[in-house]
Image 1: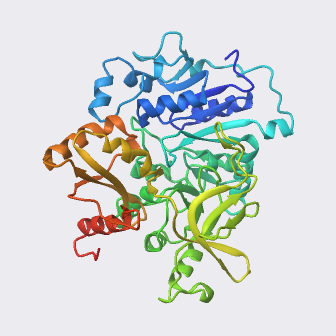
Image 2 (image 1 turned 30 degrees about the horizontal axis):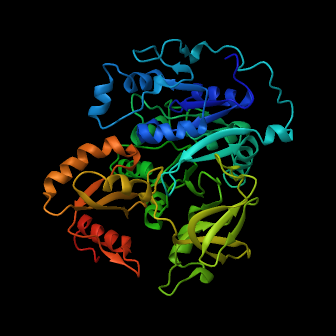
Image 3 (image 1 turned 30 degrees about the vertical axis):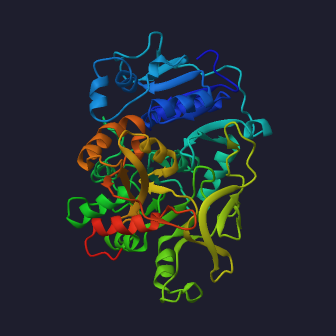
Length: 500
């Protein structure tokens, strides 16, 4: 990869695997950075984000090139509602993983052919200030407007994040962590543990039941590296595993000692069920976000004690802990709670800032919290709501304001509002309320939206349910959409008998 080095950026679209992480770490080691942009967000958003990051290199799987180019496979992807940009047409130097397929651009090089270092001139003999402040990763997240938000992490902020995680999720020799998350795997390797990754097959997503089957990889060797001791999941991945444990179709290895949960709220009833079905397994609940990861880590037993009101100083008027218990901020994380209860966080594990903007001093999380003090007197965070109109589904944060104007521009749509309706595990289903233009047939509009939305909005934000309404409930002096009322209405439709 002659020419890749200090200050270069590589667009990276390879599913997690050992080879993928070796390539990404090699790019950072060479002095460059890795840019993550989900190709499934649609051509327009992809173009905006790619133009902002301006990478001169790209690494992708050959299958992505094939289904995004003008090839026989492209209609198959579009038939499944996946509209991808023409990845191979980008004016960058291309590297591909996997076998060569039609659509891989002429002159692209196979990743497996990279035998030499990415560059010959980079020296990382010590943790100098220049190395610590080097831009390492750019991760694009959905902002509250259409403007791209590229979160920049440096080598120093990533290392600090690894260190903070390890203060409460310790790893050691003999451990095997099974996860596709770099934030889990690298601290494990540094501590001398073994890191394995879930298989994807031909899917873009991890199959939770397949993942469960991978935990005890070799029968009869549960005391070795072949059986997992630690696991990272999001609640929506754990839910089907719990169902399978309950019906007897899945048995987890006796070596499994810790499950780490993150990326979405973990409700106390769901956690209680998990601890009942997985006795002997400890749960660590990680709270953080792309800009500051992690912020706090709670122990599962601590959260249930809070929820049951067992800790007197946390007890609310109804006899139980009020709010969602997040735990004590990590040692290096500084916090500030504003007058409106919004949490601001800072620390060495905070990102440098957003691409194209000034450096960040502290991060406004958009989460509303209150502080409580346990037996040690240390402040502990309890979430009481969100300031942003944000929906959390799986690992994705969805900001309705990014998509509602686009949906409202569809022919026949007068107004559109997206809300999240929580389920029993803390995940949220996306419900889209649409008011048609006067005289427009509701059934035809619903069909049009189902057909057109995959082509105009982020695949990860596609609604689970579309409801045609005569009007959107509103509230306040400015008659803004009443999202609370909509959530209640849709919760009642999901579960008849629920008081909306």
